[in-house]
Image 1: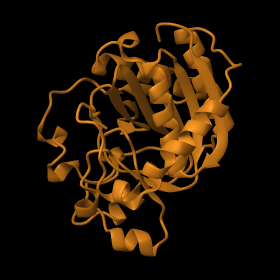
Image 2: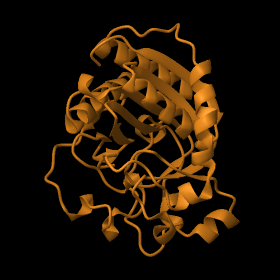
Image 3: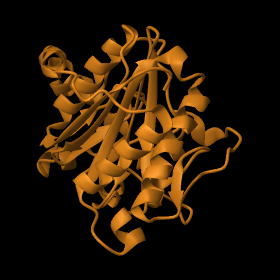
Length: 272
């Protein structure tokens, strides 16, 4: 990752708004030169990509009637149901990781190697040409992030096991994503207005024919990161980050942000 980085293993499930506020705080620190790898868990939450027209795309009435928590990510991509996963976040100065696609693939190489450590034959999706599906306004862009794959994503048997999104702003980079251990991404299709693409995800529990605990998966990611990027700094304090996240949390708790959203104009959308 082009310099020493700090590892934060955060296994206690947190509400979606707080997880996104923490990642936004890490992006701020990346603009100041810090590098972080955070591994974390969620209270079950539905997240929308930054550029999704959520109010037109998803059934808000059904989501709220079912008491499904929802949040909008600061990054792009499509909707994800967060339950039974390890989520990773990499934040660093953007220049230290190269261009968008280069950084996307390099981080996914680490995740591929981590999944191989667990025993699954993970591969990266081959590069593909951009298509209408990449446009944020197309109907095909609706539905789960795990309904399809793009070049460089982590697959097992042709099915997507990691979904990621990246944002660059003010010289900082944030890439975060879900490594599916268990759960059901089909929930996204059930709350999508109109016809959603079929779910194309695979769970590590299915691929390995055994349960994979959060701690086991997080340890594999940390080990693969150490092999690729060198040993992590385990001594960094997180209290200032949590304090800043509490200040940023109002945005991510706001229904107007969740269902409409605003963010700086130079935000970069990932192909998730």
